[in-house]
Image 1 (cartoon, rainbow, N blue to C red):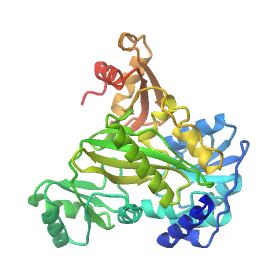
Image 2: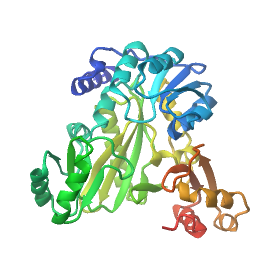
Image 3: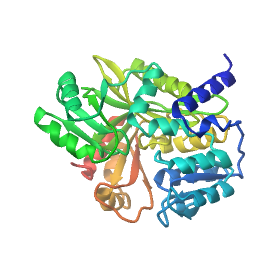
Length: 410
């Protein structure tokens, strides 16, 4: 089967699953050349870094975000309006030659309008799938990829039965709206079943119970796919979370090469079967005993891919621009070992102080810390304010520098 036929089949399948406007709008692939304007739904840090990378390629950017002087708005034009403001979205469509998004929770009416009146190569079907954990899991399974055992929870009794089947601990999650540990509860005993259900059912969305996977590593792979069917994957990153927020991304991941190859193959399979255009981040658990399970998908640039900005031939942000504009994809090869460490609000002042002075530890370990700040005004303790990519001859040296700073001591 030709790549064009595969593309048409994937798009049709996605539209049928989504029940979205994709079924009514046939997207003919276009090549968007430098000099054109890219519209971004969302003006946060991902949009900012996308605009910085794309501007260097010759593109202009305009973002839609309700927060004045949003991170992306500091480096691009900005339309200040709510995400469900159809007229503002229509203005975005008027100014842009192609539209993308930096976060998943895009309003359905806005998405439908944009699909009808502008060029959104990513479509709405994948958004519809990844906005909802049950739909997402079913789509992953349909692609022939394993997920952790799960059950839809319709009431307290169903939760008790599923928890008895999965054992403790198990993880209750809202089907929509959760991120950075929000919208989930690790149930560690029968006594927590009722309070967990009471707390999460207030979200007024379906609930999902997942079997707790005892993993050796958390991994992610970011894949890019263009309308012409070209797919490239970035090297596997090993991820460490603290308080349910990504703390470190380590590349190359400290897992066997065969596991890295398998993880990349799973990401390619998902990107192809789901008809992805742009980037998709595939988050996984790896157990030496049981292998790989896919945990979540994110159809956009991802925190675990920030290491690519300094350590790869092509960054995830340039690759995303290339993919949505139907340019040839860039070489994602890793040039140097790297550890990305997130800078939360509580880390911001000590990080700036540290990196504004000569650093004996960096010189001794022969590492190069590269700071990226997001331009956010309010530095709440757990808010992501930036990240540092620590380039080194080995990930062990990069981790040693992070440890010696004591900035990120928990």
